[in-house]
Amino acid sequence: MQTHEIRKRFLDHFIRAGHTEIPSASLILDDPNLLFVNAGMVPFKPYFLGEQTPPSERATSIQKCVRTLDIEEVGITTRHNTFFQMAGNFSFGDYFKREAIGFAWSLLTDSVDDGGFGIEPTRLWPTVYLDDDEAEAIWRDEIGVPAERIQRRGMADNYWSMGVPGPCGPCSEIFYDRGPDYGVEGGPEADEDRYIEIWNLVFMQNQRGPGIGKDNYEILGPLPRQNIDTGMGIERVACILQDVDNVYETDLLKPVIDVAARLTGRSYNSSAADDVRFRVIADHTRTAVMLISDGVLPGNDGRGYVLRRLLRRIVRSARLLGATEATMGEFVDTVLATMAQSYPVLTDDADRIRAVAVREEDAFLATLSAGSKLFDDAAASTAGAGRTQISGRDAFALHDTYGFPIDLTLEMAAEAGLSVDEQGFADLMAEQRQRAKADANANKKSHADLSVYREFLDRGPTEFTGFDELVSEARV
Ligand code: ATP
Ligand code: MG
Ligand code: MG
Ligand code: MG
Image 1 (cartoon, protein in one colour):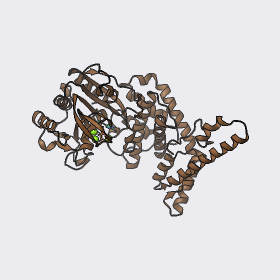
Image 2 (cartoon, protein in one colour):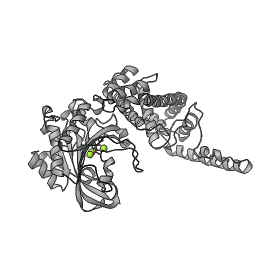
Image 3 (cartoon, protein in one colour):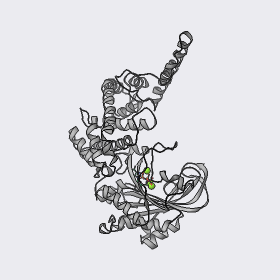
Image 4 (spheres, helix red, strand yellow):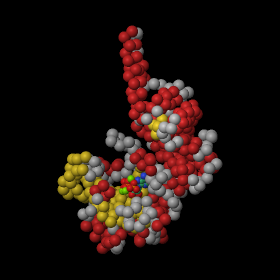
């Protein structure tokens, strides 16, 4: 079943059950605490907090999500994308646990002819929160899941809050058993690679008190109105229904891997290290396209820097696979083609999206070709001297002269089996900033007002790299 069809079945299932479809919000919302929308409930926060009245008591959506926290997992686990689509159903003071569990179960297990996904019920393992006898009883007595396939988990896995005082409550998650090829027996408690999480059902029933973090707060008492918030990962369901190994090989992303194989001359499925690079290219190109579509441009901090980092990882991965020419345009075109069916807006904006990505590739290729010799020399002399750490001075020179962001030096060092003296690098950066300030002050005393340059000096050095943009210092 293709992704587009999975999306449609999800929405139809919940519309049939009286939910109003709400279109995905932009990845960028006006929320100072959030870089990108990272869950389906985010646009509905004002309803859950009681600040606004929802348009209806039942809603369903497929929300675009970006999770930068998962960036290091991409291509290594079978299930983490940086961009993914979270399908959800929401009850604002209307139905609660019984219906939420029933709706999820029927969509997953109803036959394909009946509008469901046709998943074999014996593959599914629900979890419940430690003391949630009510949810466990529904799974066992009403749905008929054998008790030994229902696991209880603690606060870190199965209790939800927004991280601030407000609604909170236990969750029940649904995992799919991929079979012995993927890991050891024993349910999600034993192995979350074999048992892949597909759906999280959140039962907002209590009020959270102040306190810090995920599990260090007081639960104050029941909410006046109980809510439901659920999130099903479209990519993960696609992976299961298309019977592919991982979320990067589904219908939306595999075409990018194929293009990368053609352009680099390397084949997929022949080396573990290369396979990660192929998957990174597919995953990150899609995330970059969706971010540019929602108005992000490559930059030196915040959202722009995330985008820049994604685009650079694509370029680097393609190089490491053997690409010698620019590849970004074709990667982007492939994503635009697979995603346009669900996001027609991409078609109208295709030229601009491609141009933004390609411009960043051009600039980064120039940086890379300028700095690679210095990096190779530094790596060789480090190894030659029997050391495993590239000096802070070398990392600083790469940054100062060639505009290598420290991330890039770290990544290239890791690939060469080396580390970097990050503290030494940071000290040199700080020293340089001090020097720039002192110079500026000296100039100010002796000459005309130079304060217009102040901003640039405070930002540290500019590099002569033939670039049209400054290189990042955001991570320094
Ligand atoms: P995991 O434990 O696998 O990292 P999670 O517990 O962080 O997942 P939730 O926050 O509960 O995920 O999000 C709800 C659903 O969204 C998950 O059950 C999963 O199907 C999907 N999902 C979460 N993170 C990702 C991701 N990085 N890529 C693809 N799908 C995801
Ligand atoms: Mg996670
Ligand atoms: Mg989880
Ligand atoms: Mg979860």
